[in-house]
Amino acid sequence: MDAPQANGQLPSPTGNIIGSKSSATQLGACDGTPLQTIGISSPVYHVTEEFGDHRKVASFYSPAPCMTPLGLPGVMDAEGRVDESRLRMHIFKNGGVSLSERGQVWRFLFGMYPCSSTSLERPLLQEQLSVRYHAMKMKWHKLLPSTIRMRLNGTDGKICKIFVVLPVKWLLSGTFSLPFIPLSCGGSLAELVAAVQYFDARQERVQQQAEDQSDEVRERLSFLELQAQVLLERVTFDLEELQEAIRIIDKDVPRTDRDLPYYSGEGLGNLLVLRDILITYAAFHPEVSYAQGMNDLCSRFLEVLDSEVDTYWSFSCYMEKFSKDFRADGLHRKIELEAALLKELDPQLHTHLITDNMESFTFCHRWLLLGFQREFEHYDALRLFEILSCDHLELISQKVDRARYQERIARRHSIEDKPVCESQAVNTEFTFELFICATILLDNRDALLRCRNDVQLIQFANSLQGTLDLNSTLKKAEEHFYNYCKRSTWDYMNSLCRARKNKEDHFLYQLRSFFS
Image 1 (spheres, rainbow, N blue to C red):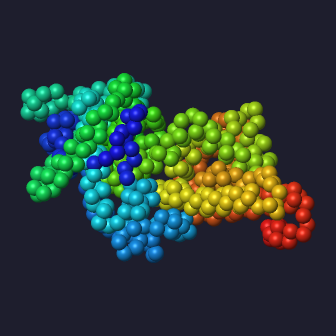
Image 2: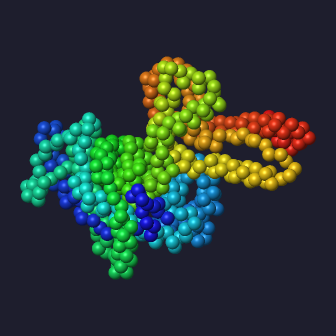
Image 3: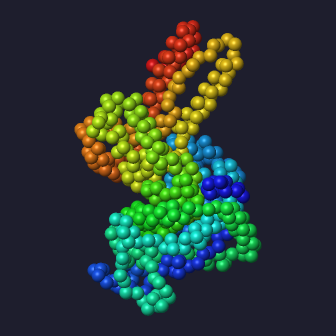
């Protein structure tokens, strides 16, 4: 196993699913006994009857996808290795993958499973990741036992007090703490009790699975657990910062995607699963910790993967690349790039949006941070997220850059050509998500030109929620992308020809005419 880094962050996944103590003790869960409220107009609830069993609580880990073959043509070989380039190309050219394939594809796309791993290797990797995640979660549980239970944070940051009449057996067992949704966040008391009950039932299933394991499996997992404990031994936490992160998480999680079926019925317990994942991430990535918006991103992974362990590692891999977007400098850079791209595509609209009365493109903040999660219908937003994450066009740009680099190296060693100072043909920092954003702006050009201040821009951005058509936006964004590349390459070739002043170079002039 790799050793932890100096800052306490664990290395990326390249390890016993020991069942933990029932959350009835940890969370103060109910057992379905009728509960009567005081000062609340709700009747007496039987939580198992009030909410249908629409969705299950996510599993702790999912061994099934380890060996499941991908149904995408030409992507997986006979031994289970994935051709990463073909996988990304398939996602981009087909506008995403089917719902049945999405969970398996995301495990490769976001790096939880190395594409070079075989079907026989992945179950062992799954065991290592499960044991390691369990050990990580138990570490902050032991250091901060009071944070195992969610604080009832209201929207104003104050503690919401809910007075209830409890069965005598609960009161005799010790202090009872309701660890869930504050009424001011839109959750009912019945939902609160149901969520804890469902989460508790899942914990009991995990415990039972651990008890049913064979001696051989127990021995192997015990060894992996020992490895994980050694790996985590030197990891230290800034407890004050972690507690602050947990306070914010407890405020954000109850408000996460509450209208989705995934968080209805028994799925209410998934909010507690989401909370554990976010706290574990914040604890072991102190340089990033937690920032508002991470709950929405992590919720996507949990909904698609439906596994606590798989969600944690996939989310962690995603954040390796995009954690900078949750820092002020990273997001400011992305907004600057969006402004620069719009200047290329529509100088007039760009000039209008950077007037003194409007802060340049800050209204695009949420779009770029959350990958347009609110602007498209939910399942279209998931599809767009995987299209943007496949980086297909960006990978092509990287291949072109490598080819141009090899050309420059060859030219330096050539005695026939004089070295030429070349400008960059295209700005490779213009990622496809920036073209998606620019397409939305250009499609709403007239409405934006009528905006005169930041308030009107924010109102405009809010008016787009759930109204955009993904297929149309993708088609237009791809057209803008290729038109930009075509125009930029033509300008580059034109300047190159002028610099060389060699009209006998027929290839350059033919290539230039091709782009004209």
